[in-house]
Image (cartoon, rainbow, N blue to C red; front, side, top):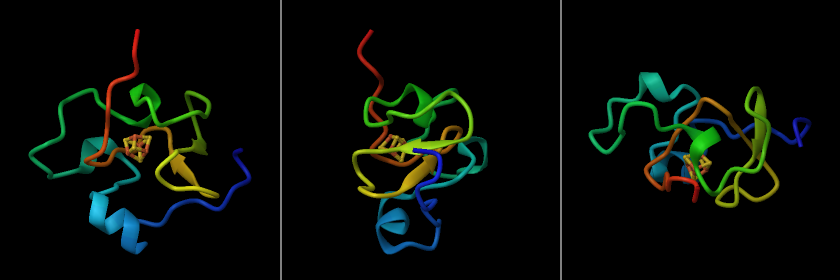
Length: 75
Ligand code: SF4
């Protein structure tokens, strides 16, 4: 999964979703501290590096990234 092409912040879908490679860098008011791709239910990668996200088929997002579709993983 880590070898999938990484989603670029400049990608139109990424822009539409406010995706950032580093969740701590977002200025989006919807971001809650601590939320990132690792604790999002759409992410299926490792805790570090990059991994698949259901919203970006065929690409990998940053584990420490974030976007407005973040949905907390079910416990
Ligand atoms: Fe990250 Fe979740 Fe957004 Fe995918 S949907 S980019 S895993 S925050």
